[in-house]
Image 1 (tube, rainbow, N blue to C red):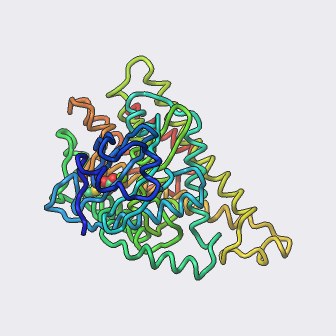
Image 2: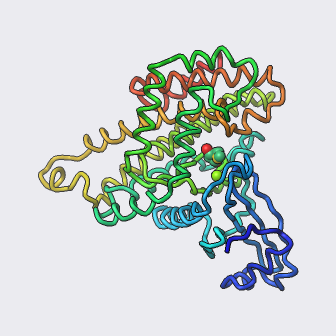
Image 3: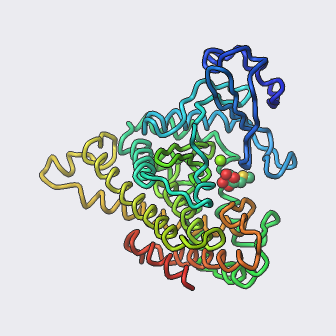
Length: 411
Ligand code: SR1
Ligand code: MG
């Protein structure tokens, strides 16, 4: 039966995991074990021995951020394992290698990424990552395309949608914390003093809330592709020039624009929070963040188009309707990418709201200790989020999106 891991006994409990003793080296009793989890939900350990290191991630039966008053099913580790398996096949090298999965103990033993660090921490520290936009843009395109009917056979897709439909409580967290709580005085909410007037403007805006609820409906009912489901800068690990994606326990089938939209919001929150972290290099670092946003969308579209032209084998947009009859399929692809873009902008605006108003804030703003400095930066972020949700169809491209960010940054 399930038992939460502890550093002192972890070696003994995992000693029979196939291949682990060889990978770590030495006797399990001598392994160095550190708990390093700083996320909202799980335990994360690093095991170190003379031959190497591995990571062990174990689900807790409750939300770590809140405590055992908020129970959460252990089965989320099952979905994380299956999501990692699919991401590894759809975009080889993007995620950590999995060495072992124990469903009863809700634990995954995986590759230790070194010298990678959580991207959010690097962005707060003002560090640049070469190739970030290209790598993650390609990841979003490959997982979106290859997890959809553009690539999968009808029966295979339906079976996978059915499998992931068993993950009930985790999507419900997103439905509540991301799409609902920011827009009313929910019990778990909190925000920086000084934001009350801006928050009231958002919560009074019926048209805004209608658009958010329409996006929630698409999130819950549109099973276009298998999403990472929580792709923010805390779900990316990077060195100066290498990037991996971690933590897909929020994986579910949903709209193709969700992951890249959530990620863009987290880049924009990094952008707006930088005056709380930087001095002389503020302008150039903020411009680099906007380059990352533009580059991510450019890489997404380029890779999506490449896959469309070279791999389209699924049930959608069959070749016989386009190329085989001498018609190009580019207009159909452009129409699909337009929908993806508008979903991404809407999700982006909603994520910009929830990280400032709902339960789980982010360190980009939270680590600015002075509320008098933090509140106006958060207000810019909230107001841009509002414009994105209300005007998604009026923003032509990522260049215009970044121009909008510069405008709010100067406000
Ligand atoms: C209760 S879980 C809060 C948040 O942490 C995860 O990283 C997700 O973003 C979730 O919304
Ligand atoms: Mg996570």
